[in-house]
Length: 447
Image (cartoon, rainbow, N blue to C red; front, side, top):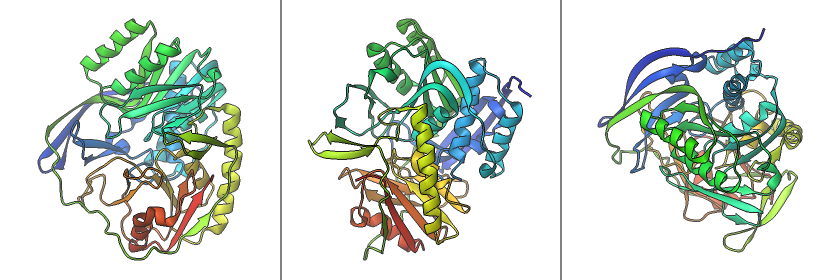
């Protein structure tokens, strides 16, 4: 039975004591699919002068580990919001099943059918947090669709590059690599996907940059959380008038937030590192296609063609699903542990998560991040443990892995888009060993 899905309209207020001197309050106005704030996020403090706290998503596999299919189901729910807006039939039963899978830890049971939209559509996911979420939304549609994710990688050799800034972020400079004009021409719709919209400035920045070079008839933003104030909503209306194109925001939860206090440096629970580098099993299952490019230092670098950074079609995505399934089944046979972590790296999230979904039971996924968050051993606090290490491909840039407590896993597969050696990430593998993870695999998918 197909029916329209309506939001739960209510106002709920909740206050979070993030730290003793930092409090954040929220007021929820709309909760689509009856997902409560507790299902969607937890709170943490962070090292950021512009905003000293973070709504840490429980659904995207970045700071908090999840079942491999949870980001895909979340993408499906956002896709369902879009499908309803586009006038497509949506199944109330399928959506209820998706919500139940998220709220009852049964993600492995849900494998939905994609929506079909006949119009040419470009989906854009934001790096680094929403690359997998954006890809999941894209994968929830069939038809004449394309996918790109933004990137912080500074590489050359493209038809064009669209630059924009993520103003509130620790690493604000972003770009959209245009490998072919086909992906930006003749679209009926451009869909931007992020995990959270606070002011919406990042979305407006990229829309303005895209529209200046490749005007689009309509923009829709999909986000798990929409925290825009009335002033920022009015800013969207002014941008619509300026560009002559509608801009719509669809979310799973909409509301307002406030804060008082600040986030000082706290006694953080970073995992200590040092000593010998433990044994690491190196796997190099080369995936095609691979793209050789030149970075900002004039060096040759190789990337995977199927990540979304260089553009994907629906056919590409079907091929990717087959290859990921084959590799996941091979890695499943290599597994020796009962509690396995599959760790993506930075922007490289969707493909590791997809591979992990074929690796059997007892698997959780998450990704490394550049986001500096205060770890703290405190009940209901979102980030309790932290590992820090230098990015193997960008010397001087710190990376983090959060929420791996001692004894939680007996095996880890670290997925690298490009080849990385254990000595390049020594603190990472040393931390794994100290946390009781004896079996460590590095899986590099291109040279």
